[in-house]
Length: 253
Ligand SMILES: [Fe+2]
Ligand SMILES: [Fe+2]
Image 1 (tube, rainbow, N blue to C red):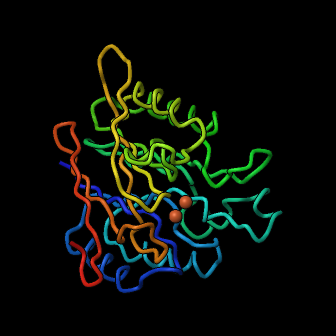
Image 2: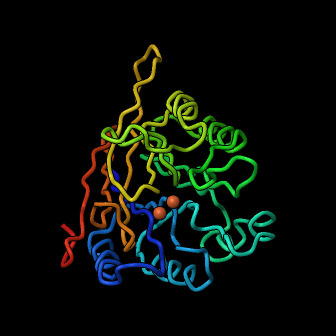
Image 3: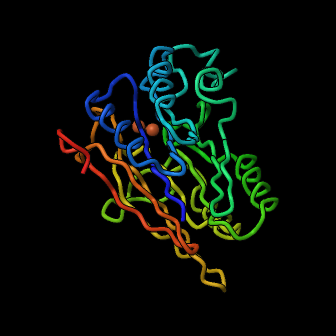
């Protein structure tokens, strides 16, 4: 059995500090095997925001892995944005924007969906570059079969069931088909500041399916009708179940 706490959209320094402090205490009080952070650790990719995010991560007493979100690349320094968009991330958070965690029961792979911009307009919705998807699929092929496979990305691959017109990550549907064939059974993501889950049924003969689980924002004060939230995922016997916890202003419940 493995337990993963899935947190997202922390958005330092625009956080509810009480919620953030209580979250750190709670995560450490009942430690998961792994904490997964699905992007938007900062608000504007400023150095002080990165320092605050890093301090939060350094407070975690268990392994963690994080992928960047669209807020984690600078909008203020165009040269840096286009030439070295993840330099700050690599200096302050982790050398790899697509980290991996693997043990006998789970395999968790990061996929970087952050787009630095370009000809297409809605860069904040993210994109799955062909090279990035191929990289994940190649990694999956090299891993031993058996453990439960999870991919972590910032942007949503599927829309909330009640909001089908939600903008989604570019090439997401295609990627889901490839990922489920690669044995991935769960995708963890964020960005919308809304928590939900959605099952992507594919047409494969074996009838395998993959679930997309979205976390709300764990600590941001920019909320979209939902309180701060995170997910606790339990993987057992090659199945995952999860519980969402909400901050009610006083405690995580
Ligand atoms: Fe966000
Ligand atoms: Fe985002």
